[in-house]
Amino acid sequence: MARIDDLRQSSDDQLTEQLGQLKREQFNLRFQAATSQLEKPSRVREVRRDIARIKTLQAQRASQNSK
Image 1 (cartoon, one colour):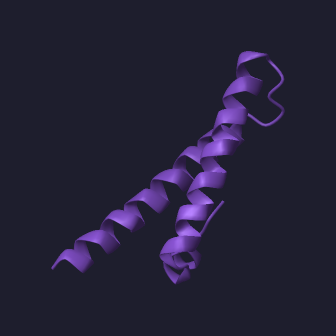
Image 2 (cartoon, rainbow, N blue to C red):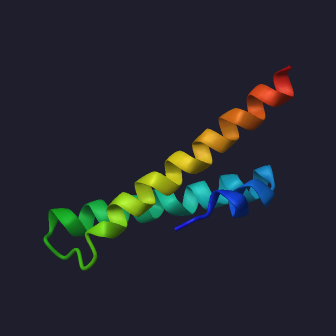
């Protein structure tokens, strides 16, 4: 699980890369859930929340840059 403090120290490029990795993982987890091969169901929730954290941080940075 990504800590918000760690994410704040990341650059915009790093955040975009992490977001892409998390979205791929989320896609794979969906397939595992559909085929009943999901080993760790709690990971779905963690990934979803990490994606939300990154998107929130990106939105905050975008609003600061537009001011």
